[in-house]
Image (tube, rainbow, N blue to C red; front, side, top):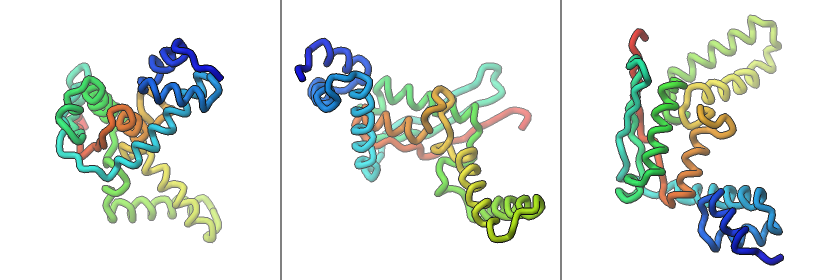
Length: 197
């Protein structure tokens, strides 16, 4: 099928991808703009996975104070170069992450940070709850595993649903930005302060 300049322009506006990438995506999807956007997102996320091991030695320490000044967050968000660190997209991502932390109260960046004693305590609680509710002993381990997945979703920043878009997690949001900005991006750590807690 013939891909017109107008189609490429529309796709570029929606996706932010380059001209050739848009042209190829439209050819692959027979000119369907929505399918082409999905195609580009999948391709971008695959590229983002390849960048995951690259060194991040630049970035920003960003902050967010919630209106009323009762909740505040500082986060260290890293990338590969100071050029990307100073782009509006990276700055916006950093602000969004801080705002999300203020609202969603994660305890850890990722499940790798959850300490062994916290894990053991949670598993004990979930196993006791299952036994108390009369569940057979043979399925308690499965119940505990399911509850632990829920624990990670609620307590690990990267696994939480993004407050501005419940269709994606913070990890997926970061990957989308890696695909757009072309560099590895990491949340190194964060601090959340709340008056009265």
